[in-house]
Amino acid sequence: MDKRHTFKDFVEIIRALRAENGCPWDREQTHTSLKPCMTEEAAELLAAIRIYEKSGDAENMREELGDILLQVVMHSVIAEEEGIFTIEDVIEEVSQKMIRRHPHVFGSVQADNADQVLVNWEEIKKKEKEGKSWIKSPLREIPQELPALARACKALKKADKLYGLPEGEETLGVRLETAFTELKEADAAHKKDELEKRYTEMLWLLCELAYRRKLSPEQMLSDLTAESIEVFEPESE
Image (spheres, helix red, strand yellow):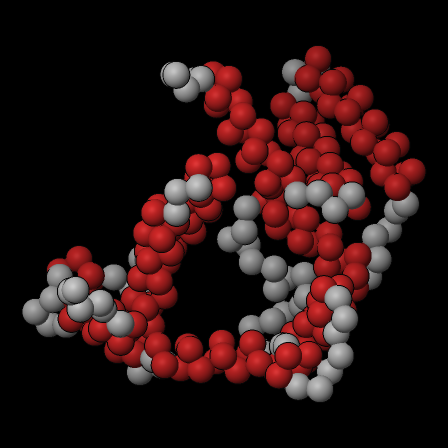
């Protein structure tokens, strides 16, 4: 049987690619230049999970997890070259985090169900972030890089928990009906700016409704898009 590569072997492979006599493309990469790669690889992993759920074939998921690991190690090796941290530092930090955030497993805290685990998790996470210079405020901490629908729902969830949402569900329904009426009027009058404004308002209100119902607009729209593609382009038998 051929020798199987270890994680340590893999890190050394990436270091070799970044070395003076390594690969010209890999040597040129930076944290910034690799950002699109991580976005694409994350999406491809999600696609691979969908394929696995649909077909039971895990080959693609195994490959895409490797590509995600490649991104993690590449960033860590670049950081090592910059003298800021190493892959060992990354592993140590996430290990400490998992132990710290699971006191019901590694400590004496009691957690009888998943809801209690989440409560403890959020409280520990809140303490971890105290004094962090890059966190301007709870809502501004939400990454701008998130897809718009997912970011809106995350903002609503956090705002509700910290400050409370300003309106009840009855008012939300009225606002949705009003916004839709005004959207139709703007469309009929060919008022593009007003149409965009009302359309955006409806998206936000629909996100709020989804949040209140514990639904995921991002996932629902993604699923509907996939279903629509099947309608437009049905797979041949």
